[in-house]
Image (cartoon, rainbow, N blue to C red; front, side, top):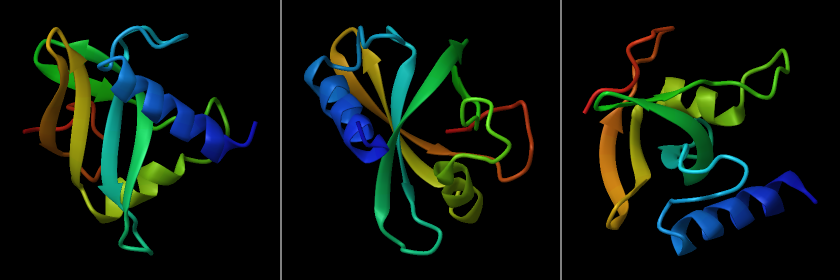
Length: 109
């Protein structure tokens, strides 16, 4: 299956299930919409995350590849992102701003 099809299927399943119980990640996934660095278009990506306290922590990893995922470059260029997370009442929008440098602090509201 092409990556774009898999990504869209994951986005559709996330929204259909209210962001909960998506195999193989369970409830540890969010949708992050950023602005393309070159295109200027809004691009949504499913991202594996971990919630620590009130923060959502994501890692810009491409499955161990030596390069960063495409969304990482978009966030570096345009750090304002929209985040959708699964909650007890369905999907909750979370406007976020991500730091542009290497940081362990995650995004801040």
